[in-house]
Image (tube, rainbow, N blue to C red; front, side, top):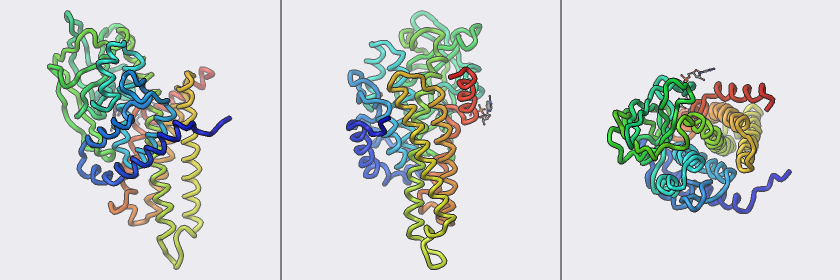
Amino acid sequence: MNFELTEEQKMIQEMCRRFAEKEIKPVAARSDETHEHPAELCKKMGELGLMGIAIPEEYGGAGMDYVSYVLAMIEVAKACASTSVIMSANNSLYCFPVNRFGTHEQKVKFLTPVASGKAIGCYGLTEAGAGSDPASMRTTAVLDGGYWIVNGEKKFITSGNVADYGVLAAVTDKEKGYKGISSFIWDLKNTPGFSVGRVEEKMGIKASGTAELVFKDARVPKENLLGEEGAGLRQMLTTLDAGRLGIAAQAVGIGRAVLEEALEYAKVREQFGKPISQFQAIQWKLADMATELDAAELLLLRGAWLQDNGKPFEKESAMAKMYASDITMRATVEGVQILGGYGYCKDFAMERHMRDAKICQIYEGTNEVMRLVIARNLLKGK
Ligand SMILES: Cc1cc2nc3c(=O)[nH]c(=O)nc-3n(C[C@H](O)[C@H](O)[C@H](O)COP(=O)(O)OP(=O)(O)OC[C@H]3O[C@@H](n4cnc5c(N)ncnc54)[C@H](O)[C@@H]3O)c2cc1C
């Protein structure tokens, strides 16, 4: 077994570390306050190839592997979780399905601008009444001549307020249940009948917009159907298997920031005449954090490696997402505790890490749903 990264993987990790430290981390607290989409950063990340890392160069991507993608995500999330979510949705929720299921013509037209970072992509599965159970979605698409006419609303869509393009699912045949759901590629800036609804006020990842997308007799051209009619839910769920690796990476990145900042603080903060790092109670917290973070990162890298090597990884990506987000949430709680009263205040980033970490246990499938996915695979003998 070889734990060594390739030269290319080390290179992107190092490049992202330097970029995130210099350009992203210094503005993270401000973005958290203003809730503004970091458009300039996204542009620069596009120029560095970070908005379509595992997409072929022919379609505007960097042509690298999924291990490189998760390594880059960790570095960006360590600096700013909000920015990492935008990167993750762009890479794995929009670019991945268009690349996997789209035709050459669709990829040239709809993948190239997003993978190259010139435009932003989003993914719309969730609705107000359809979260963990997306098959109960109500948005409908009816074919009328050369267009599908779409009516309904998508909820909680990452980057939905700023996105240029989206992959969105709708019911095309109600009689067929989940086999009657199809997905479409949308040019959101040029769609009559489409509008952005409410933008959510959230606990964390505040610079990542989370919006409702509203379709009132919205028209999407027939040729924008992604893959086959009726294959939409399967495509969307396959997309989430890959996407969960991005969320696991986001969690590991936040966890790495927590450990680094808690360690630094514990070494300099003195009480009872010595640094608090000398107290065993603090040392044990740091030891648990470091061990669990390494375990989460190994689960994550295994999932990405399986994907890169064309092997099944549904169970492994669910394990990585669930474990990384659970242990990082715990690490942020302990991180705040190590900083005491200062951890509770905004002078330090620790309280932001705690708010940012929570969402990783919820989106792209809650951790309860992750346990269902893992158990389903176990019971099938996988
Ligand atoms: C900030 C943010 C960004 C998001 N981005 C996107 C996006 O870009 N695109 C998109 O399509 N969606 C997005 N989502 C939606 C997200 O994926 C859903 O919120 C999530 O899947 C949970 O759905 P829900 O909120 O409706 O919760 P519900 O499904 O109502 O779940 C409520 C509770 O019940 C539990 N539960 C539900 N079913 C079961 C079960 N069978 N067994 C055990 N427990 C169960 C859940 O685990 C949870 O604890 C985003 C959400 C947020 C908050």
